Length: 294
Ligand SMILES: [Zn+2]
Image (cartoon, rainbow, N blue to C red; front, side, top):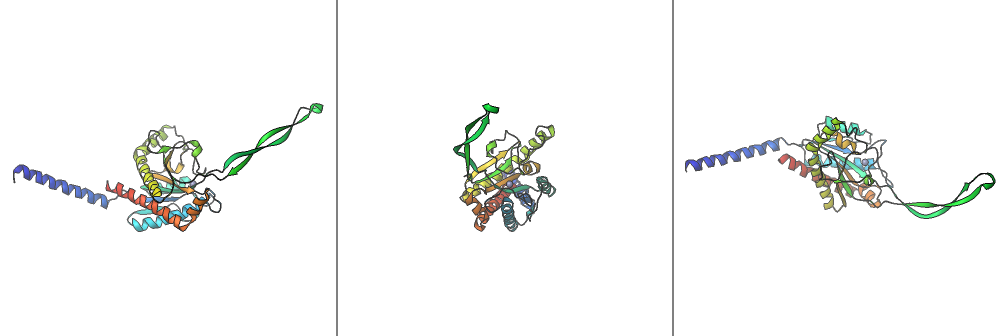
């Protein structure tokens, strides 16, 4: 063996050793150590209402099932639930729990709702009076008659916080597409203040990409189970407050529309809940493997 070949051989050996050393370190010290599961709403805040169930009931059932799945399948990962019973937390408290527990991932479970559709079904004549005294006249005007019908909106979506509008990976949504109840959707305070701008930029650099990555995995899993996916969406100024308040990649999953009869039935059924939590767990485990393996 020439000196050159021997040198090359030793170099290769060192490379292999250091590679395996790095690998051993990453698997021994996973980056995703704590996952926070947040069952949306709760207690006095029931969230969206369906024909017979509430969002807060469904999110808790889904969160508890997801907790059980993740605990058994990734036992070395700490799973923290923001609530395990029907109690109310302000979104600030939810974010505080996630931050104090030093979560590496925040998974928020919600159910969507869409306003009934209001359409003009006809017109009716309504009397009104014009003028005073002897000149007073009775006149008629036509006013529309409205009728409401169920909103056909259905499907899943996963929200990430649009910290920086230049991040184009998630689709933007128009104001008309906001379905989430007002308790969760609040103005992010002082979005134009220097502190908020710095915070948004940091969040964007540190967490946006990973949040979109997890969101995409989740929506793909939903599609695999046959659900209709509305995609990974982002919000900015009227952001979902809790997403920007967590110091970790964060997603808010809208598991379906409680205002759609079929989806309300699905989300309340055991098979539907098992399918949804299986899909979310698959995505979370895939995400964890990718991040830990890096
Ligand atoms: Zn909600």
